[in-house]
Image: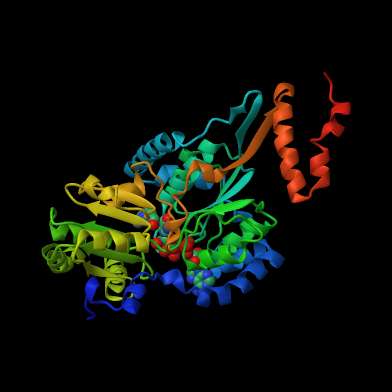
Length: 441
Ligand SMILES: NC(=O)c1ccc[n+]([C@@H]2O[C@H](COP(=O)([O-])OP(=O)(O)OC[C@H]3O[C@@H](n4cnc5c(N)ncnc54)[C@H](O)[C@@H]3O)[C@@H](O)[C@H]2O)c1
Ligand SMILES: N[C@H](CO)Cc1c[nH]c[nH+]1
Ligand SMILES: [Zn+2]
């Protein structure tokens, strides 16, 4: 059986260090070659293609054009059959997620008096229509349903629809339907993968096209978003899950190993590194992994083992804290856990991570499901320029300017000077004395 990767950063060559930064999505060529045919089929055939892909790829026997949209009876059945404990946990998560995201909602407009009598500001309006992608390949994601729906509802988007792969038999995962309704989303379409992105982009007989699509997905979804970026706003790049667990000498390596397995279990395409400056922690973690695997389901053991023995995960020993910080910032992880009794001593050194979870009582699971911050996060070093999904992703911002009569002369003079310099005569005329003949007062 392959061994878990155990590397010492200072012993790696420049190429070896660069390899560590790679994610499974670094090379999407396999998917980029195959996705155009799926897009074309949806664009030309609409519902018929969605039904065919649902049956072929998701084993959704019984799916028809008439059942692509989840019916009220399906929502009722989901509420009736879902374990009440799960429904309660969804309600609890939504409460926290809403409470957090309401803090992000800006005032509808602000105006600042830039000079006496001259005002400038911003105005925020919800995007008219947004598709929320909820994955359902290697597991169900009521969490992603909550995390995409709540900020969209807080932003006030009038046309919202969830797109999610049907489950075998042609229904939708019950918890996803319950989470959608409790979060305030009415419409759920049974379409996943690249075909869902195409349907959201072009619309079909049943599905209304959207201006934007958000939500994480497999490389099929990531590739389709990339190919359709000229037609629909694909939002932040959220691909296969990834984490760095940073552990210092204040914690037990067994705990570090437990938390390393959280994101490693999403799929064989996940990325998960334990970064530590303590050889003791590294060795304890390595020794603890088999015990943790004994408490996991076979599929999740297979996925996480593939990650930790493959190209995108393992244990990385560094010599100094500064070496650890530099590597983490270069890697720009989706999730970062500062596993330390003194996490705030490290936080100031972190400059690139989409989410930083602090201390031994804040494992990634709590962030994923119910703390409040969004679990839809940029992957593949996207954290260097993007942040987590937020209310602002569902808003359009436009500037507002208002110059009053008393303020006009001063601003017009500066504008005319610059217009003349740039060689724009109409721009200049519009703020020259030629204007005065038309102004009142
Ligand atoms: N970055 C984030 O914020 C974040 C959050 C949650 C999950 N994730 C990641 O999202 C991903 C979810 O992936 P998933 O697989 O569970 O669900 P998914 O819904 O993204 O993918 C399943 C769909 O892929 C398509 N597909 C599968 N095999 C195909 C094939 N051979 N040809 C064409 N299409 C095919 C099918 O349409 C299927 O419905 C995981 O990698 C997970 O780590 C990321
Ligand atoms: N870790 C995922 C984001 O990468 C979110 C999630 C939801 N459920 C489990 N995990
Ligand atoms: Zn997760």
